[in-house]
Length: 384
Image (tube, rainbow, N blue to C red; front, side, top):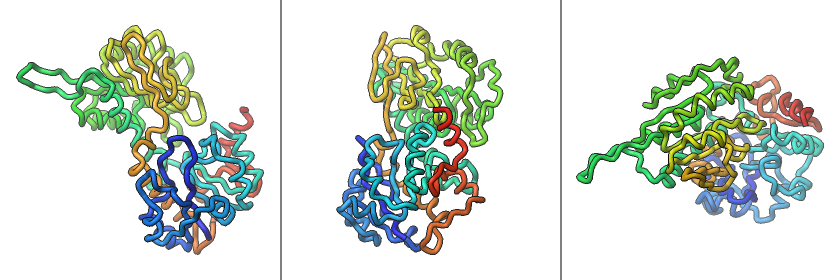
């Protein structure tokens, strides 16, 4: 059984799917690890470090692909438009592909992978159950994105975050509003608090109030009926446009008092909801900064442009792309742990063993034996 680690081709992608310290864990499953030369260099892991842990280094990409039984990527087809068809053509039928694949946003690509008779596993679909916590790659990357978002805001804000008593007078703390209290939002709250800001947070799920308050932030409660606010997987559920319209109205007052706004609301496979409309910009004071973590999904802010910084009426809107890649050492460490833990579930005695009754296998498996098998992906394909 050969587990191959591919060098990423996505622009500005610095992460690697497996780091040297986890090579030995895969060897315990009976796998041989082969790493494409240079795969870990941008995450500060050179070929020699992989080799010292027992991995083989392969400079011929096509040979690596042709010999892979399991192919590990950070961003695969669906997630990476630069993932070449020529690479896929070399893979043998039955090869397992594991990584971030955006299956709900690109179901037609998942169908093409199924037609190639690949076994396709998407890390985005990992079920949020206790047994799978060590494999939850989305939460790992969201942790980094939430942290980095606050640093971006602090960098671009004309105000300092902490309260300071100085000989030149008192500096009042910055006021930060976090919209969405999932993993990224909670990490943003914690980071902003550590920098000394006064933090408020809002989420459509009232159940997260205790988590928000445990971090020292105030939970914003709006008089709204969210219905089924949470999915079975623990994510915020999509709401009606009327709900979002009313939400925007009630949030305007809180926006007017904020120096920094971090937005984190995203619904898997769907356009991100607009939380800050263009009309709401009139309530924001000059110097305010918005960091929109949903920029790649269309943005939570009406003025967000993915990968750009927009300034209007003195308000700065930042639409970062792939923030975890900006912290490649720890992002790779976390993703590698998630992947190696997952492979520990599906590799047995040097072979791929798929227990379709296992919730982890069933939850992440997108395609096998020539067909799509994940109900949500099949439904998304019908929607196209």
